[in-house]
Length: 150
Image (cartoon, rainbow, N blue to C red; front, side, top):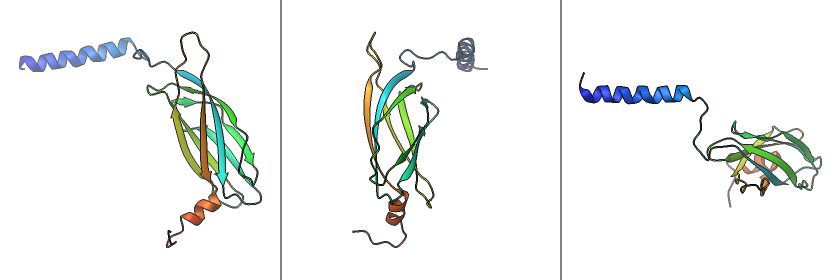
């Protein structure tokens, strides 16, 4: 075996040994981040019965309690205050917003933002996210095959 092959094998073995000794070890700056997100949701094109909305984490590195609300036909929902936690290296938090209108299949929209880290000794920052979505009825009208686009 040539000497460069032995060196490569030793380097790989050393890397595996280090990873085995410190499971869950993370690079500095990779700690979890907690923010309060002020989420404003506006739904366009609702029918007379409004819709139901479910907001849950969009991926495993983002954590918060699932929120379920009913939206009146006007399409505006009061701002929601969500305490979100991100454990990913990029501090990204993704929201899976499912809009369900009576008699229509649910439509899921995904929106996200990177969470800000808190200043030393400070409290968790508050961020705002405004999301504009179409109701399933309006989305179905827009995606009909053969529909003319203007």
